[in-house]
Length: 431
Ligand code: SDX
Image (tube, helix red, strand yellow):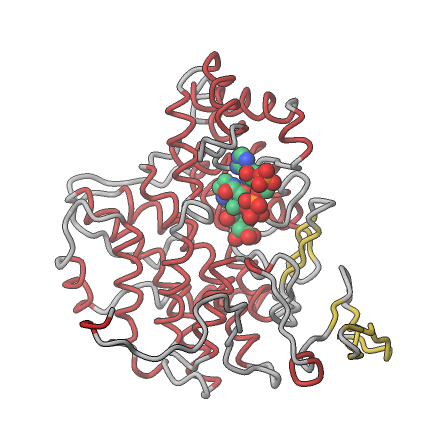
């Protein structure tokens, strides 16, 4: 952070506290409040951290007003168009786009770690077949800490690197196994002659009884979806991974915590909730009814796939996904997909409605992703696991950055306490 010795002075109750101002490379300045409690005897109050920077980072920048998303400075639309997921993984992890041999080495290391310890198959058998795949992923990824002891010491840079490669490599295998388990089909082993996205599709959709050829349209769409979901600054699941890691917990347990957080419908679970909402709407003529419900303060219903804590403009990922949805569904010959028609009509109706304009509620990354994933053959229950596969590199990049930060300390927020003040215990006969 740039320090130009500027300060903000806070005066209250005859107190004066000077708060240093730090300047970013781009985006809002920050007020450094680390000494506020010591010098002023007060906390700040910011439920949901709407105005709080929890860390310094150089990985991803979001300008919510302008609808800008940069990964190490590169705009997401250019990365989606010109790069591919494993190259974006390298960029997020190491800070620069790889040169040819660097990319080849990285892809080779990931490819050769896609298999899971054979003993881990048995973890799946402890679940009911109707378990949600996110429950399976949370459990199995956490269980990795019981198998890969040689990559749990976070103080060892080499072990951190091994854990990084293992997690990126094995998440598609675990997600595909979770899917196969819930549909009663045998697990499909990864193959080293396939690229990352093709391998994932084959592990999900191949069966022993016949050959499976990966459709290049689907693998390109899969890779684009992985690329668009890779990282997103200090979102809820990334902040969960950072907070869990701040206690020194092992990387597999911390990533499992991130998976658990991502599952929520307000976060990564929104892609499943969005498609289920679009199907509930069913036809374009029912859109006004749901728009009215979304605006009704007495109705908890919200338009899933709409709104964002940071974006008060179009989510740039939604823009790319909308274009991909058109392309993929046309190439698959399902361009008249009724759900896509409802989605487009709903988007137009919401954007034309003053309520959504005033509250700056635009389609987010989850609005179109589900339509593409359904067209590719995935059930809605697999939408968030796919998000988790992609976001693993973002969680790990932020985890690595935090561990390497000399200012890192255990995360321990304070509170505004409004409960009972001191009182003595009363025996039950006297209550
Ligand atoms: C992701 O943080 C990230 O970066 C997340 C993510 C990532 O890549 O990691 O981008 C991925 O999680 C995208 C968001 C997916 N979630 C959804 O699509 C669920 C539907 N969206 C809402 O639940 C909501 O918009 C949130 C949770 C996304 C954002 O919530 P905020 O910022 O806390 O906003 P808010 O709840 O304070 O809402 C502000 C106002 C409220 O009305 P008022 O109280 O001011 O009258 O807008 C309304 C809300 O009622 N509102 C909506 C709405 N979202 C907000 N009204 C109808 N439909 C919606 N979707």
